[in-house]
Image (cartoon, rainbow, N blue to C red; front, top):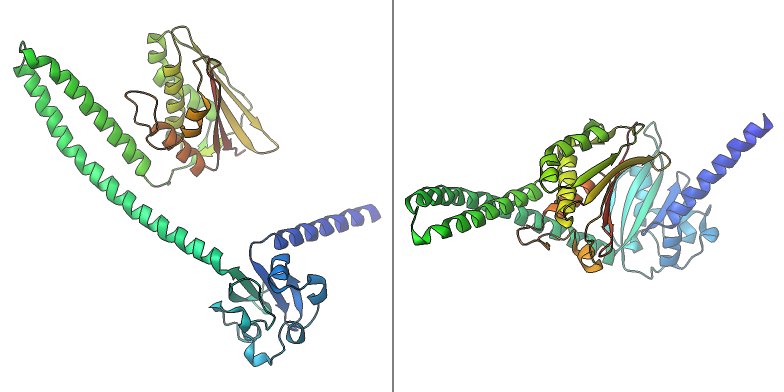
Length: 360
């Protein structure tokens, strides 16, 4: 019994230590008082802001150590008494100690599980950080609007292109035997390329929403191989599978994941010459809870500069490529909480590894 109690005590101490570490590493200053107006939390960030050591203020009353005024002038005490929250006020409203960093302070009541106020909290946020966050929000909103406008515009472009394609096909019949007949297939090829670019752009422009279900990764890979099998045969390429039969299901959008695997496989096809091989292997790490899918080919390999730009939009080394395939693939994997890595050297083939959270 004593050992059991000692184990519980150690776990509690460890939990408290982790809590202290987490609070001290917050990028904002944190001040928490209890219902008796005594300081219970004073993290290292706030210690740097105010130039006071936490051990000297913890357990001390707020008034007298951080504020030499009466309670009516301190908004943290007002939050404690009334529950009213204050937003973006100057530090002087909470403490008369000079703050070395330009900050704005928000206050919040601290309530227990039954809803009773047991304390109050003040969060000191550096003004520069707040400005960065505001700028990031503004930039994100502008990009979102631009994305919506671009998607709408690109979608409208597709309609006249479809009409042009139809008329070109009719014109091709009329020009049979004409010296200029050879230009029509070239025009149709470029038109199809433009339509493909539009399709990939619209796929990329879709929001990150996905319909996720419990999915067998092995079955998904087998379905992908059925789709690319004919192309592999025509190119005389060999695909070897090594699927972990004990692989747990993963919680993903199966169609989106299929799109990622097809993009990777087609890239491998383009890197292989006749007789080339692709090795597809699945495994999972029980400790980290990640399923791994590895695609290794015996192709020409990729240099470091190309790998560095591989996931950038519109970057491609193919004459007919759009540069959105791997960019969209990474977006899909990121949205699923996973990761996609590429390892390669010129002349030594390429390995693409996809990691996804596993669900048992």
